[in-house]
Length: 291
Length: 226
Image (cartoon, rainbow over all chains, first blue to last red; front, side, top):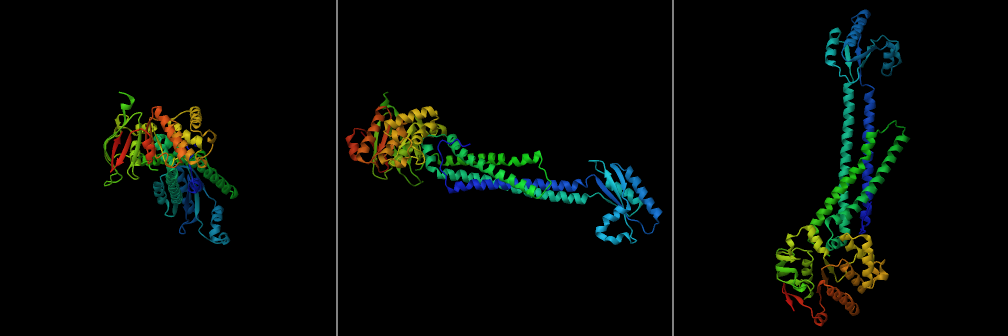
């Protein structure tokens, strides 16, 4: 990559910088991957409850079983007629008991207990159901009908996922800013280490563009090499973690694009800050050639 | 107008100092003619190096006007100044060779800056190392060369681009008598080819033995002695 014709000198400090950049890119890739994994977990959690809701009817102890059954059938009728509802299924009592067993224990089958009836409602995809009017309609039948559209749960999951994502991308942004600062430091260090060469270049009439090309191409070659190393180590780590922990996650094309995007972002920004650093230094030194 | 009547560097009421109150050179009015050979003399610390530095535009003057190649330096753009610097070469007492580059790369550097092709660079470097007698050291690094050889390398580097002006700051100051004579003869050869040479020196015998005009720095002022 480096097409330097002046063979810039470096020291242990500038040799340490590639490690730092590599580590920063490693962290960025790792964090972006974490963001996607969290996204996926969130999606998996919410996918199971999307486009569905449950209606719970608590049997009224003051009514006989016929009256309670009537409430159930009227509820089913209203649900079937409601806009956005695709399918309505009354859950068998046994299944409801099964669901409650973990909380109430095996004795539940033998005791007289007002087991609630649960209606599983499937909604038409991507259609927003008017739960307020539905609640009002069902409220006219009985006060013991509860609608649970999982919105609280979904909101909470989404909020957690968004918070984690926000945090992760803030960290990635900070890491990229750190990479910029490191690139500036690297360029400045290179110019300081090669101040004699720099002065000689200016004395011999090198144009700013020539000097900038020499220093920036060197700095950039360091950034590219170390970014690639950090990137591949990160990929290896992610795949190892997913493989050895049997995580069933898949990164999609868009995710890979974002992860691969770390390198060009770091390289382009490093290029820009390096060139600005060189130009600013040259402005200061152009009429101040000191040996 | 003959070549020697044409001005190549002209100082007009030039003042120079490193701080607001410091004044190293005051009211300098000198005219360097194209193709001339000038000695620059003065006591240590008188301002010889500072004057040379102004001539290669390594510092800006504090006041007055400095004309180079018929134009006020202040009116040149940065790129134009870079091009002017390509026409001025400087030879230092301590050579200022780049120790991490070998003889070839040290000599190739000014040509690379000018944008010459690698083929031209190889041809010119090969020619010039023969001229200064360093052909066998072309792959060596400056550290293994003697003082005289390093100075010859430094001169070779300064003339390889065929500059119009050579500024030499005590070029024979760090070498023995024999090497000094060889080095001085190189400057005289370049002068005969039409290069303007300004040589700062403490060597009174050398100055007296040659019939070249003398720029003398005294009490922050510069005057020409013919």
